[in-house]
Amino acid sequence: DCPGPHLSTVDSYLVIETKPKQNIGTILRCAVAFAIDRIVLIGSPKFGTHGAHGAQKFIPIMHFYYWVREQCVAMMLMH
Image 1 (cartoon, rainbow, N blue to C red):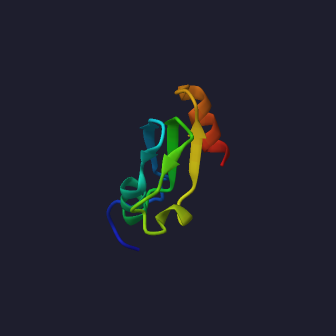
Image 2: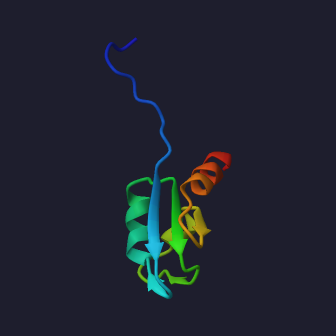
Image 3: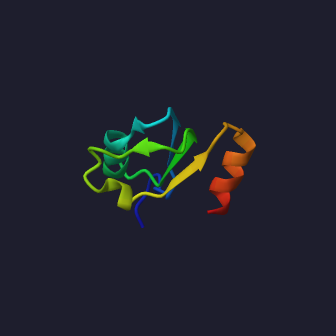
């Protein structure tokens, strides 16, 4: 046994408010690099992934049209 604090796994979410046709490729690439568990998009469902270099294949993306905190938290906990 190792004395001291023990690391536990914690899910991490990145919430992004999107505009129509916004490019989130760089954000997706960084999210994968920093081991974010899920991306939550609020706003427009139309977004670009230019510059992601395939990162969008490795991170789940959830979308909501409006920011409703309770809805987002409930959906994240169910998945």
